[in-house]
Image (tube, rainbow, N blue to C red; front, side):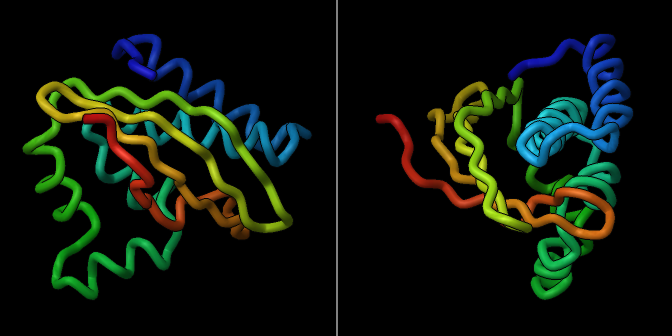
Length: 135
């Protein structure tokens, strides 16, 4: 999903408002993935680290000697025109997965199974595992 700047901010606001309004877990997971896509497109490490990633994923950066935001800024330096399309979402209790197709200029597209966990603050991304790439 490639979101233009103006509509991306509006989509994030609508996503935030709808996330707690009786929508299903599946809808909330899709909203979280859309929030992630918009934040990556805008290189918004602060939002990703505080509102999108699960605390355990943020902790992995610390384990590598980096803050989450610093780690993402390093990642963003090689990322140009990112896209993210969300496909099948599966929810099992407090765990979920979303199959995505991601890409960026100069990089091969990758199919990823992103794992999410339901926390007291809503759904959060637990891991970003690559499952395959196209040649």
